[in-house]
Image (cartoon, rainbow, N blue to C red; front, side, top):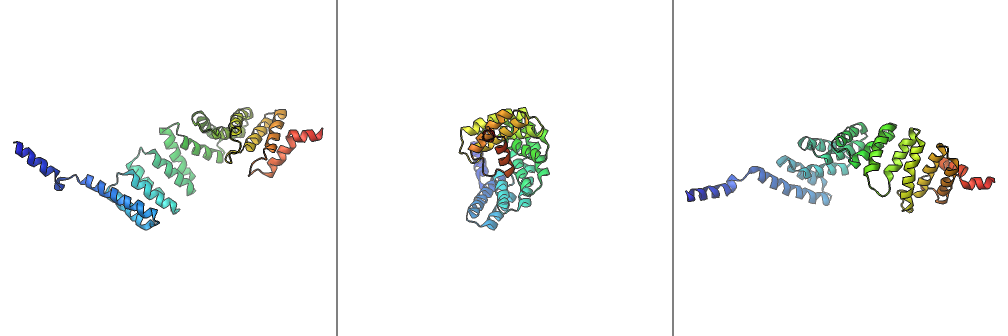
Length: 262
């Protein structure tokens, strides 16, 4: 009996009895790595062929779909990239990253309404997903759905610990659009404090923060306080894409202007 078990063990260990799924997985992974190497060398057609064959051999490795979709994305073939991720989502329905990247590709291909559906799905599953909240909030701002934008950016302001406090800035924009100027001022004070700690950050210029705070203070009827921040915006030399109308507004209501009048 002992020898019978030994013979059975040897037979099952033989390649003839190996699990074909494991063999396909290893072979697919090897082919995928060749695809990565070809892509690094700029041989995109060879890379694509290898990724596609890897998926055909073993369609249960998430890396294969990610690589192929971004290969198409780099070539601006967005519809093909979307098709790859749609196939991946059918196999990996719980993979939030695939939904996120498909939504991004939808946005790049001017199909924002389809991107919104993916943002919604992600947020339903992960209510505090900062990436999805950010993108959906921007969508709602762009399409003037300010109440919904406010909800997304309020969530971000609570859960996003980014030192720029940029979520508070966009939350203020939603409040401003809804005529809630006092609430906008509260959020902009938080944003101003954050930008003052990094005044030379080109992505969050302090002059812009001062201007928007001043603008909402003025809309809230706090003219004297607004003039102080208009002056600060001028002293900070505004920001690179400031408009002529914004310059005129700041000069009109700033302390600098009031001093000249006196």
